[in-house]
Image 1 (cartoon, rainbow, N blue to C red):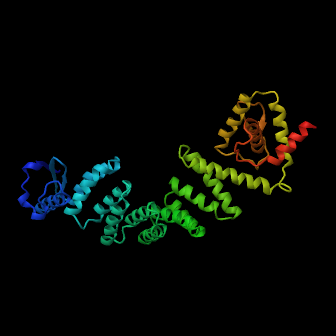
Image 2 (image 1 turned 180 degrees about the vertical axis):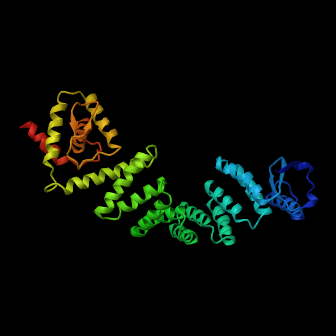
Image 3 (image 1 turned 90 degrees about the vertical axis):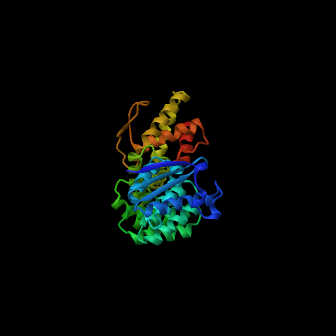
Length: 358
């Protein structure tokens, strides 16, 4: 239980402070006040947390460092970062050798965009505790946001050295290695991260991204499965759109690799059928069909299975995944020829148009 009291600034005895720190309101004054109470309560075996504003000094005394930190952590979890910083700064005066306090203060400064301050505190934390893996990650994140990728990479590598069985450290290093085009290493670390944190969305997405760049068919197939899993498990994530674009690109490559000379006669026939159907439908109906297919595609259309296993509310019949993709492409081409559809059926579309003209 904390003991708390407040002292109005006009009643605080500045003679308790060094002469150079007696001007009320200066940073030197605030620091000296914190150090004064920290020393006073340390002599009693307690930890003081002190804040100084324009009106008063607030002092809270705790029986131990851990209980003082426990008071601040809920503020951080609630997103009250700016409110927590003065308390954490005070704790660094009362408990200068507490790596946990410095770590939380460093992360708080990083969240506030004060990256230089963050790095200073976090480096102190790892000096006190070289095995503090998450402090190394914090340093890496700060450097990354400062656009210093080499320093960020070094910090992330230190984090994994400190704790190779921490999925968080592996995930951050793997993600950084993608940026350095060290894809095989990135895959190794991200695969380990996912093994340690099987449900972590960033590990799923990160491994998919690394595998996408690995350049092999097997890696691309695994990336496709991981992107689909990400879309299904985290449909509201802002990264879903990127995952969907990647899956569309995979599908396109598979389509072209299975065609003769890059041309798909089956797609041409699907488009020709769609053109015939759309003659009887207005623009609004065509758009409704295209949008329904696009929504269905978010959960993954299997364009390699020729079986007619999909149905639409807006169009009667059963369709294969490839058939639906061709219908959607046709609808969007008629709505807006410049629209990016994610499918490259230009040659098949032109051939189908010529067929209709004939």
